[in-house]
Image (spheres, rainbow, N blue to C red):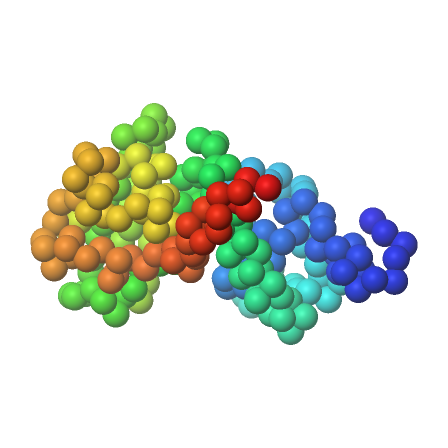
Length: 235
């Protein structure tokens, strides 16, 4: 794709403007390295297209593809050019939270992505003991409604099959509500009081979940309607 313009924005969009490309960059910047990890984060993207986009990013100097030592497969690492895009991606996220949060639909609440983000959000240094097990029962999910996060030291595993371990905290909640909680759209206190969340476990873990389950980077971004006159938001 070429816009045939000397403008640096046009040249940048020739590399970054393809569908899924910025989301792959998002994952590179969040330390995603393996092909199956990209697939987990981008579950609606076909493996063929993912392979194509990764090759395009490699050809344009935004990632380095390296063979996994002693194993099959490859790992992908961001180059300096890719890392320099972090503030760009961050600002796009801020803009999206401010201006487009009201456009989310039921289809946007992706369970696989939610669990990946929850896994990344665990603050292991805020947990006590050698192991902590969290169980989620998603009341609006037919297939695999139960998910577990097992934290052992700094190792975090997410599974859809019972790991056979004693559970410390139980979440009974819808996918949408859990997404909104993680994004900071609603508080745990409000979700519990309105009956949208049942949280069971010791008070040391349930009284302030955000201490050990860090909310989204964009959780504190106010929507445009809270900072601008209504006429400007609607324009």
